Image 1 (cartoon, rainbow, N blue to C red):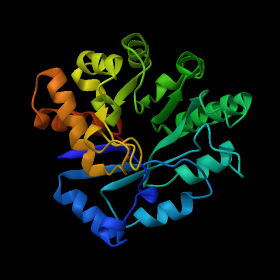
Image 2 (cartoon, helix red, strand yellow; image 1 turned 90 degrees about the vertical axis):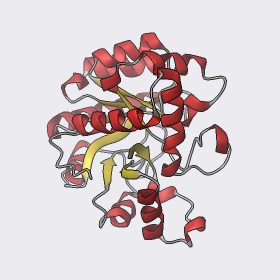
Image 3 (spheres, rainbow, N blue to C red; image 1 turned 180 degrees about the vertical axis):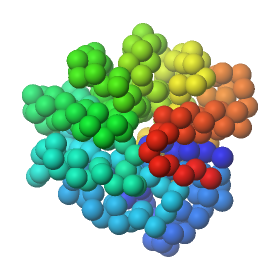
Length: 262
């Protein structure tokens, strides 16, 4: 049984499911995905996303604004606190820094990041971290703002082992996406081999970043098994062991959030 620790279910192409979200969820369950963490990237679409998953106990939510999303409503602390004080919300984010696209002013990104960390600490909820070409700066802010108090996930990990070690020291888990299946992902594969068994997660980031067999096509939570199979090969264990260990890790990270796992 798998947990997809990072997906954007409100952006999934439901065409194969006759545009029926319930059918999509049922298919994921049939294929062994027993929990999904649906990640927010802005506040404008959040209410619709919350309504979409409201009736599903096997779907949890985060609240936050992606560092590179221009939002009409800047994520003020009081707004994030109000939205995150919700039984469905188990994490804050995705948040962080993105110096690659640079669509949002960097000073604004950094303050937005600090706001999310303050909310996470206030509510004792883990953080979901996005970082792209801003690895050192992201870790520096996490350290300065005492984010280790709540920890969280470095999602869609794309850095090297030295970076992973520092993230682990700051109480963060390392989450691997379909990128780990790409042939040129040498540094990421090394991290996948070295990360402690009790500190990794698996994700799809669907509908983005489909794993190697489907690269360039829409991604779905059921493809998380390809990430598990790659990690199993790299670590010399079975995919079932990866599924079980990553699920245990997810449950440990979010213990205290009222999470109900099958």
